[in-house]
Length: 310
Image (cartoon, helix red, strand yellow):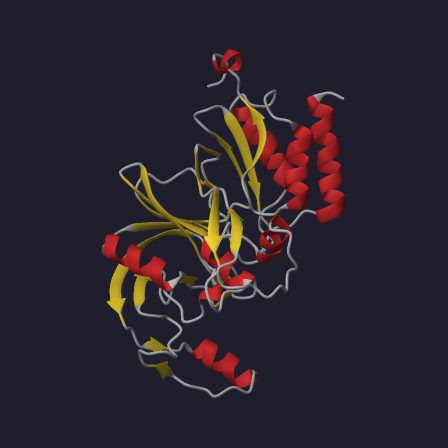
């Protein structure tokens, strides 16, 4: 079967399994397509008292389901302090930012870039599908510690509907969902902040704000200043060609129904960068079908091919 036939076949399979989804309230901004960096990889983690798979996954940017499967344990296993888990969490750094903060919503990752160099990468928690995090170009307009949470009227209405105690503000302290650090965005009411529920990171549970683990937001807060640019994108599929010639593909669930056809995206990016013949399209189709949110090898540009790749 020729490459074009393979692409057509995988496209039909993908559409049959997943369907095409289009925007309903979120407008995706065009992004640069071929990435060149990855973060994460493989490491050992020693279980601490009180740890559970969801919390560990939130800390390292990997699903609890994958953690369980990768370590050959049950999803609901009770972990023992001192137990060692294998963490496999490679993520592609999206292209398109030389300076500032880049957040990719489906990926649930924040990347801090300065002077064209990657400074740090953190898992984040983002808005629920019915309360999505906005995409676009913003900037940091405020930096605050121990901020009082002024509860928006819309969230007060939600509290009322759910028969919860309705409050109009929450002072700093252990009950404040903003945590200790707040970076306000130029999108009114939205910010990058800590959380009193670290296990909620790497999930879609907020009212649109961006949550980080308390240790991660403390690091980020210390590095960024008012005026730092922030770009939020919506890109479920990412394709990268690394300096060593490896081609990696990372695909996430299209949680907001904005991503379109992942195979078409990969095919277009590959064609635009002369990589069509270097990709194993069977492997690419499998990565798309699994959509497990990790960078996986789908090909390699060999030395002889490099002369013709631009």
